[in-house]
Image (cartoon, rainbow, N blue to C red; front, side, top):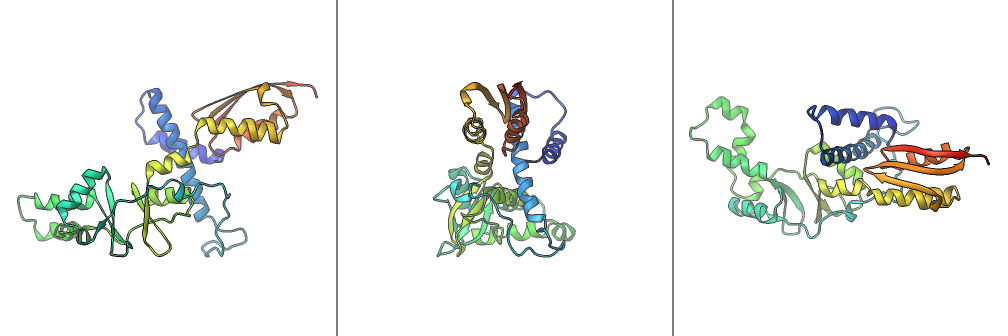
Length: 282
């Protein structure tokens, strides 16, 4: 994530939270959210930015290349995915959501093609109208047309939201996160090239995969940067990583200090680098 993206994401997250003292747990949660939003912002930038040499507003001929190591949806999705058929009745839908502890389920046809998604909101729309003690007037029915139309449904096919917003197993996790954020969805069906359900991915899965563990960041610094890139002995340095903040201490050639710090800052999930290095003559 660039410094600019960090500043924007940090500002947005601070504005979204009331001004009060945070507990250590809240600090950690907000840091995770900032890092998550940064990854989503990077995916959005790839989608919106035109290719070099392409006029703004024109369609790109090829997708922006991504590193082969980028996590894919297939690595984080849940299988098998809970689903219902279109003729599933209202009460059974409610029981399914409750039993599976999920907020939404895909609706599939006889060949497992995803035809829609039924969620708690879809069921609540029906319950809300059913529990209204008086008959709404024509203006209310016009204003809440979709709500009243959905309230007449008795099965998944008549209550679901369609078409379903889905992702593919080979999609980058950052793209799936951007899709979930843009659509304000907690769960996304994962479909194959024929539109058949193969799994489900939720926002927590995406968050966990986008925010790397501190131990993984430390391992990359010690093995890739210190040992392989700079040909230094990791044992000669003290590297600590906490919530994405890297503290590095040790002694090395003064000319190598800027190179080491810059290499650490370039790691995707590093939030900040604290420099406790001391220089020595070559």
